[in-house]
Image 1 (cartoon, rainbow, N blue to C red):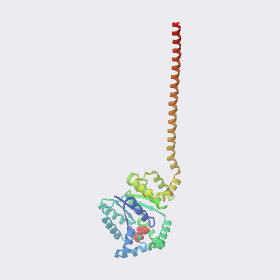
Image 2 (image 1 turned 135 degrees about the vertical axis):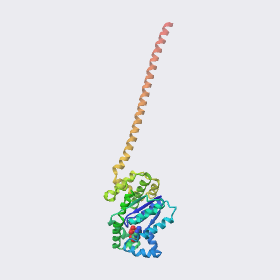
Image 3 (image 1 turned 180 degrees about the horizontal axis):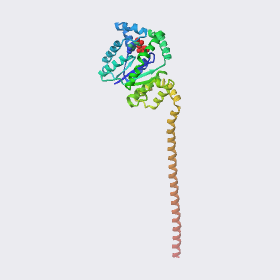
Length: 314
Ligand code: ADP
């Protein structure tokens, strides 16, 4: 079972990426934000209770969200795995999730944090608010409150998952396709090759924002992709073109270094073959010359003997 916690501040792109990952890896998307909004739209008691809290940018109580997740896990016993989006957001929720999954013998496989800076988050959320009308995205103060709560209550969970060696960080600024590629590479590294380039000990604080994209794109280039990720990427080949461009820019020497030795090796082989041919030709010529000499000698001997015999006859 593949259970992934997709982690990140409001507006990091968890929802968008979760949907793509669920499609690529056949997982079920569990978003507590979506579940709560569904309760609100159905005007349930729980929904009404949650709405006032959400509109202020505060966190709904742990009991409510944990119960919602428990119910969803029970409703999907055949699932190949889940993507937890927006859950857990507190230490209590993280512990509860571990317990819920332990009961089902299917622990969290990994936690991936999408890293996006606060300025970009504010910009994205205000844009989303204007487009979708989501109340908590329209008010800048509420957005700031949510980011504040994330930094205070949720971000510390990086340590929780780091201690379990499950923490991975992905640079969340770029095109949707680029980020999706990074996420796939991270998942594949951890699950298939068992050779993670982010082993949970490195945090975003250790890597400057400028270094991050180049580092991840390099990692992708050096990582053989599994069929699943390949399929998902091939699907969007046209949209993924910019990723290739950035990858080339960030690691031009590496890319050349990979092709040069191959070309050199081929050239060497060709030269060797030609040299071998020359040797064979030379040997053949030598042999031919020898044969010529021998036959010439034989002819002389033959001439001499015929001369002698004719003299004798005389
Ligand atoms: P975003 O991540 O952009 O804030 P979400 O849709 O994930 O959007 O969440 C919207 C709101 O729903 C949150 O601001 C919070 O009030 C509430 N919420 C969602 N998930 C949780 C959770 N795990 N714990 C507490 N509150 C939550």
